[in-house]
Length: 212
Image (cartoon, rainbow, N blue to C red):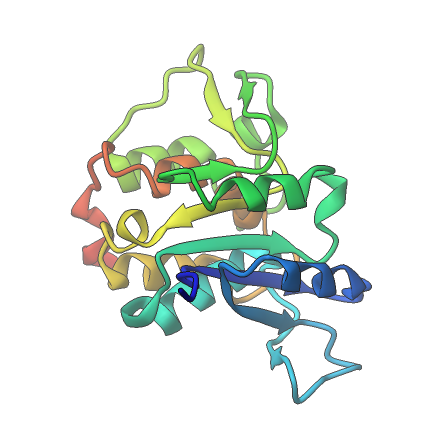
């Protein structure tokens, strides 16, 4: 009986060596590997070429927006060199065969406190506070003493049901924030928000619709 190929891999690549991708072929549950190439000097017709903007946040959101109606049951989001943040990557991926996941981080969840530079300070004039997004997206007033949960490295698996729990326009809205610069502060903020963005238990504030 053929195994259900219920996993898609989404990779945000710049100049990294992707020879490790060959090892994914051993996992018979993997259906597609989407490689988004942001190295504009070395474009590849076998990959999906994107402008070098928005870091991995832009890649992840671009994939969701353009594949929203045809997402696989499980979607794995990775950087071009995933091992800096997830040394046991292949072990984690193999666990997904049996885990009934919602969102499955490939790195230890860290508690980030009020002293984080990304929580309380703007890196450049156009940057926005993480408290702005918590309020604007989830109607949650982030107290100065409140800790947040972070999956550093932004590498995780997420169930389709959790992604489509948010409307497509919501992801289009987020994509705008990381579509204008190579290294926007919002990409680092989204790194701290993925666990909230895909958590179906957290209600979405519809304020963003006013900006669409």
